[in-house]
Image 1 (cartoon, rainbow, N blue to C red):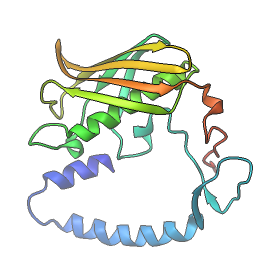
Image 2: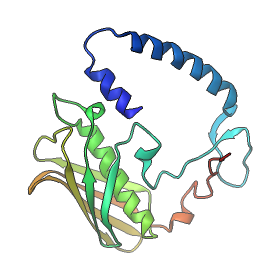
Image 3: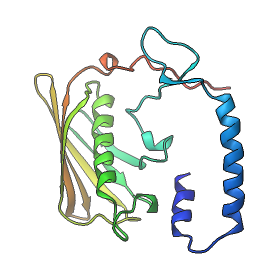
Image 4: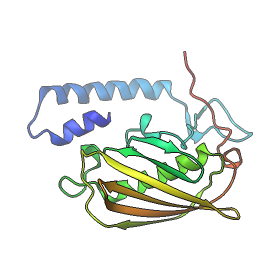
Length: 194
């Protein structure tokens, strides 16, 4: 879906494949609506029902199942430091050829929480302060790094996004520290496999 979105955003003229795709989307939406849950509230906690939707764990690799979130890759991930790579496709464009600042905030929140959950002490974001230093290009391999400090029930993470050695933007995320299983929704349902 993310790749199709990029192609559609770049398409200048009408195309028969788009008309066919839109007609199929209407049909698929009708079929999936009939197959989906009748209650859109998440299936979490003690009082749950199969009529509710599943809740997917939003701690790890959200972009692998949600096309609204960019995909990234960690090269190193431990309790104090993490680093990795990201390449923002066309669907994250704001100004011409550049990443929209709101997607940068989403990206930082995702990678910081991913790191915290992976090392066993996560938390709900209390604040996220983003500083834009240089325009962030689309379709370019970028690097990110995170330094994480855990205090008394507070996790503070400082992250940067770079191109070569140039810092494009930086972010400080403060979160309330809790073990991941203490967070609301930790007893989430798993997607059924056939």
